[in-house]
Image 1 (cartoon, helix red, strand yellow):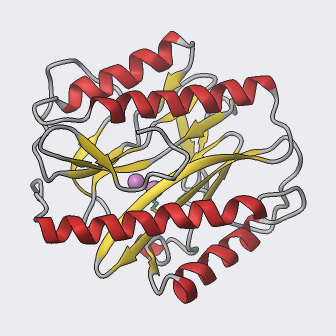
Image 2 (cartoon, rainbow, N blue to C red):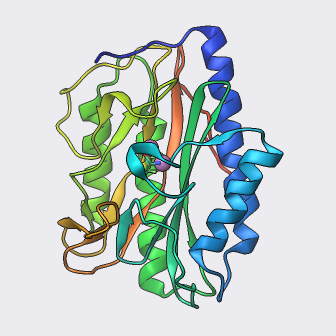
Length: 255
Ligand code: MF3
Ligand code: CO
Ligand code: CO
């Protein structure tokens, strides 16, 4: 595979898909409350994507994934499958939304807290957001993927957290996961240089404990080996002539 540079017309489609993904995250927030099941959150998102947005939830049946969104709680790192468990006060969770509109993907995830989070959980969530933002802020032509990965890793580790290595950001467009791989760790000056028209995600997974993860028997849910808390945020980003555009930006966000 190789990098697919998007045309102005394709970029316009990516903007629309990105906006839809962000709007699902804005919509679902008020439903994340104690007592709700992650299946119920999945149903609400599925219905909204299909019936309101007239779009397609990309995860559904993707390589056999059984639901329309990913919900990863507490020590779950990513790819959690919505189920019958009820959220309770103090839980933190990532909701990861990918929609397809007119053939193009928009992919974004964010953290939610049920009730008031612990100080530890809030610190992890906020630091992980900052780690993602540091990566996004660096995006411009000529910057290398290794520069991004290094900055995200260095920032996270400076806060005594660890970065998951087994999963990474990815090119995105007509294909959900295309080249390049966007590692959230790395070496400055290494990796490919960014070029205008590239679209990819930045989606660091940051653990409060050790970086190691394991896959649950359901073959999807990734958890921390030491059961420490994990957080993740994700945006889809376009490289522009002189910088970047965050295609899944929500109105309250700075970039
Ligand atoms: N949205 C995830 C990502 O950020 C991928 C989910 S794949 C699924 O790349 F099959 F688990 F949905
Ligand atoms: Co992604
Ligand atoms: Co995602």
